[in-house]
Length: 493
Image 1: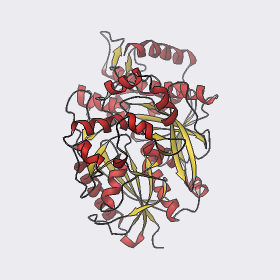
Image 2: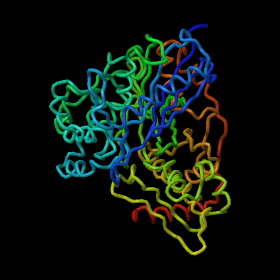
Image 3: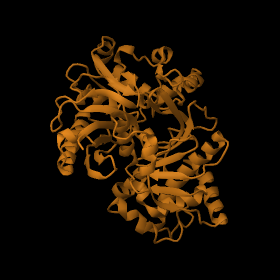
Image 4: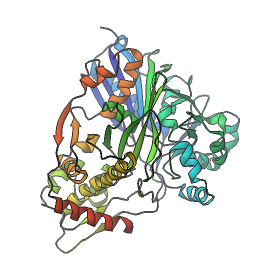
């Protein structure tokens, strides 16, 4: 049948993946293209929007070629994206105004501290579900408007567009016809009231964000626009799904019911817990966020973010050179029966939830003369799993019940030792699906639902298959010793 294929663009922190699937979830193509990371000064991370757009174009062209499908077989296009990364570009022509400031960037920490000192955090917390942290887009936008020559005046005049990466891609994919974002990405800006699902005038005033620069906010599933002038892609393909990467992964893991949760292991690690149709305010350092909005109904989630997960493995590879590729960490770590008392707190970009300490630095403690590379590798995996344990513990307190199980995805979920450590430390089963591309799959599902490729969420649930289940097996005394060392080390980071 014609028009039974969905193309999903997963625009991530280090690269863009394009996934082509049919309605039976057979993968027709999967192509990734990496792009530059720019580090102007310590604590600062930037992306060139033209690098991102080039990676999207190249991945799209290669995926469509690899899939062998005809243009008239494409039903729709879905987008998922690195969240909080803040972009500014010209409304006419789409030319970037400076580099995008990436979600990992910490340069606006003093701005957040100033707002906190003015007693404004409770207001932001109540309206947005977020904390005042440089992780989010609002203070990044103010920085760009204040530091790029002429940007504020042009923004106020309506000549510039602000958005997260989804919004930039929609503008480019539609030939400049649409400036829009979905509710999940809007909910990560510090400018959006998640109860009213609207930009908030008071918060915009506090962060000096002109309303003229903000995108239209749309649902996560539904037509936003149609492709126009994209090399290698036919004009007129509807863009019918948008969600930030973590919400997209929650949807891609079929966590449709309140109480279901997932953790995505990428550059960072992100745990989301579906709380249903009303926002739940966290008392234990988590975020409240919009999970998705479909056909007029909104779902919310509690979220915890560990800023560094796969990035810690990359540091072992690129910074220390003790592994040649990320895949080498598991066999190396398995050479050590334990970490030998070593503790690695991977606060390489500050500490996120539930600690929220942007000033924190990475810490390795317990080093002695006999410490080996294998023990450091194992301690790195333990540090990632312990970061997620902190999130799961806070989530259980907020929800009033422990997590029953955890669905996992992302590149590092392929690491069997890490997943076993996660099950052991959290004390719950960890379920890894057959298809770990849950982020791209979520965008495909959201788009395909709106385009009629799948009739309802029940059809999607039937297609979701578990590949492996990791059950806890660590001795309680060993677990408690690991947790005690971790809890002693974190405050020192």
